[in-house]
Length: 220
Image (cartoon, rainbow, N blue to C red; front, side, top):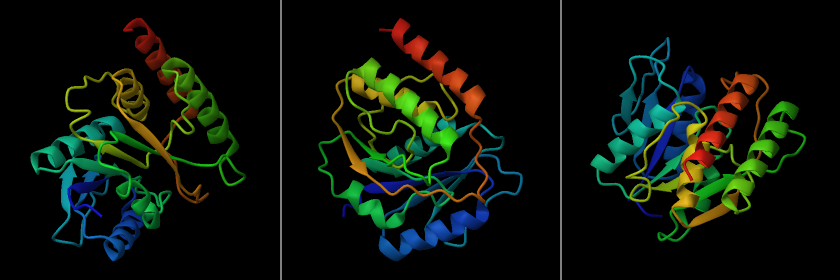
């Protein structure tokens, strides 16, 4: 497992889950962990000296938090970054699925089964957005909303972005495919905890997604 790959975790108001996630990762790997605190009301505190913590002064959105993490990792000399959500929906035992993919693959996308554990609203929005992106890019994307991914930092270095929130992950995927980047997809577990609060707002985020698609078509 290559140490030129960092693990990037954007986080907002998830101190308890984040602590558990970090411990599980460190039990498995020695890869560098980068945490971006996206302006949490109770700032994140890290109990490990070897973890890099970036703190946004305000809530800037997941997209901008990821961009800050990518920039930091690039400055530190890393070639790839694996992104994980901080709410324990991504199983650290499956990090090897991403690390074992060949280095010449630009994007490794995790995809989940839309089974009974996935909330109905999330299942529907995931199906819709994945179908639209698949139609737009001419590649079958199985799960456009899964944040468990591996990015080649060189492949995204020159991209310009419009989105700053959750739609950023769809935007970067569309740009990557349009730039003929090499994409591979790996199956990951579908994990949902009903007690965890989601910060995705389905209606407003769907509107933003539609805006993203329109902009993508117009820029073609």
